[in-house]
Image (cartoon, rainbow, N blue to C red; front, side, top):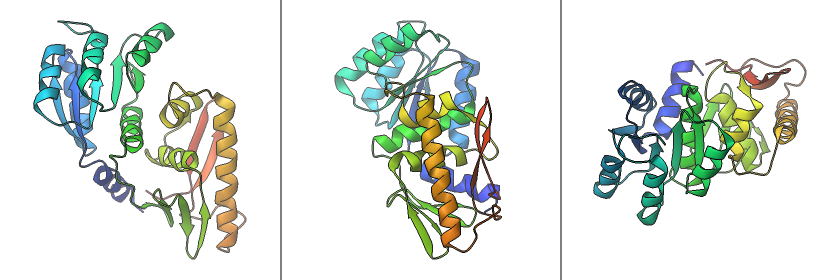
Length: 251
């Protein structure tokens, strides 16, 4: 599958999602809004906390991306008020990276947390993960080269062969495949797949990658393509001391 088709698939999956961005910095607000729209989301920008709460009361949103530092009130206060009436997933986007601020945000009701400056691809991946966990993201089959990943049945197919995956393995493979050629660090994968509040560490990522890699290799063998990675069959490459990258797939 060519890259344009892969991105078209990703945009189609997120097409129905409506995001409210509460951000007072015009440059950041415009950049994130453009990023979300480029990836198929419908995005509205609120420059203050009060405006954000007003928009949430006036319209239906699937996600909220909320800055902690706002000109009229604290983003944490906005989050607490939001949680009194709304159940939509909330991702905190802020320059405050200390663990104390993360704990405060999560305890106030945030579902995820991303520190500025951030990787645009990671923001999109985390929002898609939040949508999936909330049941608002379509789980249609995704083509990874000649393989077909079906999140609904949690299977990866190649020709007439298929292999069953766990939910974490599905999400991990989707994350690795979401940006062609991107190297994902263990901490990025932990946050995107397991979430900040999960009681796991880097070893969990390594063991899940190991199982997923073994299943992909077994799938290739069942399809009569064992040995060196075949074109169009995904392969997870380890970059020691850095993280993981998905290879072997034409985008």
